[in-house]
Length: 155
Image 1 (cartoon, rainbow, N blue to C red):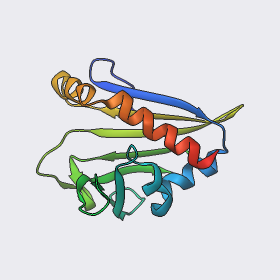
Image 2 (cartoon, rainbow, N blue to C red; image 1 turned 60 degrees about the vertical axis):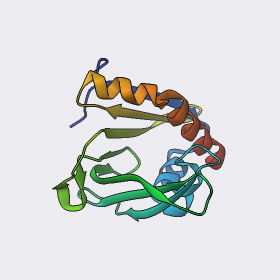
Image 3 (cartoon, rainbow, N blue to C red; image 1 turned 180 degrees about the vertical axis):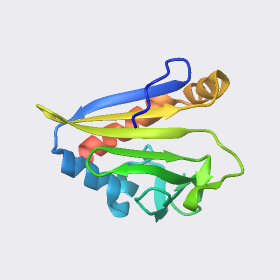
Image 4 (cartoon, one colour; image 1 turned 45 degrees about the horizontal axis):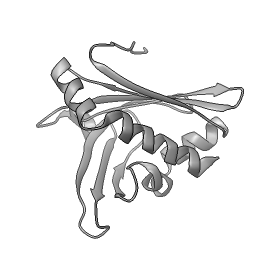
């Protein structure tokens, strides 16, 4: 099943990455590579859990100074379709246990393109207020920056 974008609730960024789909996928699937691009530099990222399968834990921490790390994403993978799609949410934690709070479900798709890979990231929200809050927090700049960093890593 593929979720359709809801323009009032979702935010999307997309980029053609001039690299094979497997290279883009591997930069997502390998925690050491993932840490290099997941948050806008110079902020640092640590992967604490990346069980890349449905129901698997997904936890990252971030640091502004590279020393003290704090919570960033604590969630659960909902779908992992190799080389095609990754879906995670912070509404659930590992094993599909309900989380204390919820803000976003994210869908990343990977598709062949004549110039490499079309990578699309969609953040799905439960309300217009949550969508607006995410936009105000800098969704387009932040997620656009990390996709650029992903492209720079694999191109």
